[in-house]
Length: 106
Length: 122
Image (cartoon, rainbow over all chains, first blue to last red; front, side, top):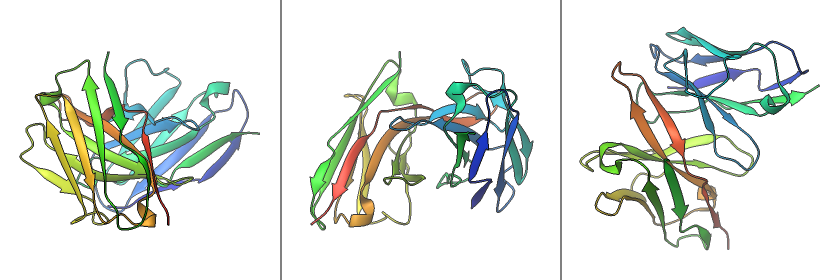
């Protein structure tokens, strides 16, 4: 199963609303997670089952979708949100990741 | 609190072997499936190997099948990755992580170690 994220790079300002899309090459139901990774750090789980917010993650993060198309939305960007974001499918092993979306400060 | 601490990374030449370890604490290790995921410098994430909570099922990425072996010792709360016939393209940070599934069948990788760097170079 291939995952394609768009865009690969995103430039935005603090306070902006941003959306990242992840498309799967086949139906993965809701077996999708989103992670945030900052330089030199391990990825951090943000959302699982496409739309369930991981405990402790700010509510400005939200996820939606099912089947083959999914989105991660950050409602109002904060300085600490500038990072790289990955989607991941957990429908079948290997649990592949998207290529990543690097969110940069405009 | 849940902790996953990898060790065993280093610099090796192509064709050599290395064994990574991951010491788990803060949870009942024997109840969770565990994974190794790697990330080459400046690149994305790749699932490398998975082992079921009791060690009875293992899966591998095609890129490492036949060369890498995942194992675990539940009495020592430790996960391992034996890497043989290493290639330059295996160079990466290797993360140990826990797979969790809730009662509704929703899964994720909820805890990650800090990673250990493997360099393969002549």
